[in-house]
Amino acid sequence: MTLQELLERHVRPAASGVPDWMLGCFRRRCISFANGESDNQTIVYWFQSRNTTIDLRLPVAGQQVPAKALSEYSPTELQTLANYEGWEAQSQWDGERMSWFDETALQTHNRWPEPAELKRIGNCMIEFAPSGAYVEDWRAQPTQAGPLIGLRLIDQRNLDTGECIHRGGGLIVAGDHAALVLGRPDSLSGESALREQIGSADPLSLKRLLQFETSVAQGSLTEGYTIEHSTRPERVDQWLWPTTDVDWSIKDREVRQQFTLDGATHERRFRVDTLEAHFPFDLHTPWPADARAWFGREAATLTRYTRLLD
Image 1 (cartoon, rainbow, N blue to C red):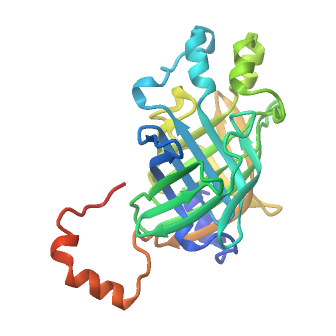
Image 2: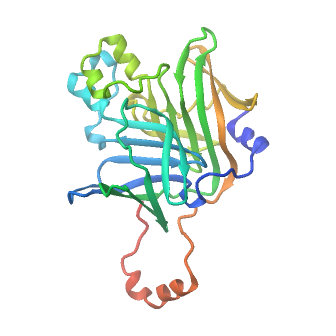
Image 3: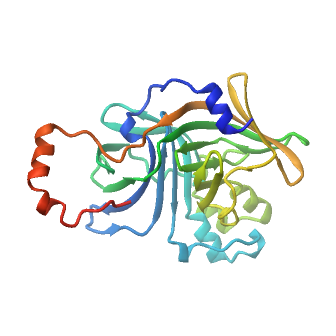
């Protein structure tokens, strides 16, 4: 069956986890640091389901490396790849702060160790580092009301050979937006920084280090999702997952996806976090009647230049 059919047959009630205002796809508009400097250029996405986060951070398009064989990359290009960021993790909300654990990450050390203090107004979600080191401005991405899906990847295997291709990661679908993380077959956590390992890696080690993907896409469950940004340059403009010869099912409380890749049958097994057929993804947040009245009275100046920032 398709993922749309699976969702319609096996939709689950909303699970406990983060509040509704934190769910969906967000793009970072700016990060400001305690030293007075800010960055509004880095491409950063945050996807959130009930208890799962996917995050992607890339340089601007003109500074990303082109798609080619690993053996063809220069040392400088490899270092650029080594500073890409993408990860999936379980999230925990205590009412004031979000923290993450059990992550699957491209980086082999934790670049963002602090929890997040979060507040959202309208489509703007502000994240404070408890230390005061930085503050980030995130914007909810416009989307039609639709599916909210959160799946945590157990593994991906070549069923013809039994080989484990990926272990750990996940898939989040938020209406028109979707993100996929495919972890390495072997854990590298606790080792030195990725940029240090890549600098001295032989070809086999290099392949192992970069056998990882975080991709962000747009589209729909019915028409498919096309990748717009990825830690794997060759994946841009491809389908996030195959749109033909792919079968989704639920077995032993796991969502399974079977598809053909390079002539071989592959299967991905996921644990379910979220399967909700209809979520509103509102860009507005509640405000009291007196605040709405104030806004109406002063609209002539308050709305002089207002527009949706995404």
